[in-house]
Length: 203
Image (cartoon, rainbow, N blue to C red):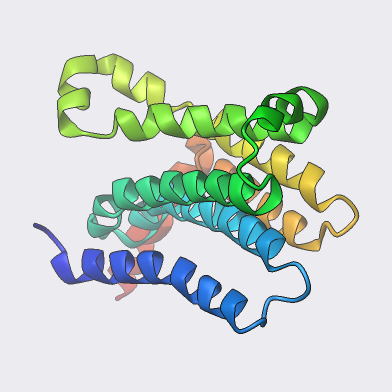
């Protein structure tokens, strides 16, 4: 496996963070409503991993190191894993495993509906992230995985509804998203490649 130690580091960090949050909840270090904090943290963790996965291509273009791309799939799968944990934490801590009320929540609370749509999009991306899916889908694989962009925007909408007045962190994530989308424009991507070439000549 290429870049084994880097992959292992990503795995250990991503897998250990939820346990650290649970530890903080156990020692009453997450405030008066630790369940809600865990739900929010897991949701934001999913967004962070999704943004990190999208950052791999610009980093590769800027640095010229192909290794960045090898982490993209792993980071995307962790985004999906955290999104699933976000849902499970919501069902457990906020709904008390009352599954009968989940349907009503989907109808009555638009941000829950939007979050469910985003999760379905991440599920589609995760389920088709294998090499077998790439071979099977062919050119359609790239078309399908462009779904990550509307999914990211839907996740941001979901978060905006959740944070409401406290939109400081949301603005940070939205700004990073705008930057990552901007560097994917052909003219900007070309400039990044040119900058890398000029930097390499100077070095």
